[in-house]
Length: 248
Ligand code: SF4
Image (tube, rainbow, N blue to C red; front, side, top):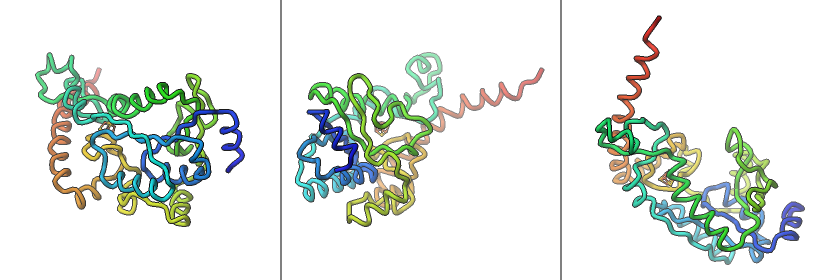
């Protein structure tokens, strides 16, 4: 057990490990494997989870002898009501915008979608279970800035990220060294796995090549929805260009 973990379990009765199934969370779980009897592992099933992620989850459960608490949400149902997530939101495709633009496609931001389908259900469960410390496989290099850093407290819950200072090659080497399961898309160039197989956002995750090869039907259906986003964006982008082109 690391010093940080010993201190953590000395101070907290109820510790949650939030497992996504991505390589960072697998490495972090392994770092704290000896603490598994003292923490509860949680996994959010968005209703659109990659089968590959479930395989990783099962392998970890079997090898380390725990059973993750499944938190069920319904991302496809939510998207049908609130719109597909996008990384660039054209105003014409928001609910208010649609009322005046006539745009047939309803869209929302990826953060709105992830919050409602992944983060909020998990957060509510943390509160319901009286969790006071959350462990995640977050790394310092993941984002430009972090809303909560390792060791900080937010709303009475402390965050602890055991691989906070690691970089990506370190994670890969660690998984290799300990023969830990890793979702197959990393080997085919994806930078990170998105939580939902048919997500229309997270354009930066690099999963397209893998998806085209291994989930061709889902990929074709996704392309149709991505094309609708492009079409919705085109009008607003044209107006932006018009603004920039005007002089005087
Ligand atoms: S991964 Fe995509 S579809 Fe899933 S919750 Fe996040 S934004 Fe929504």
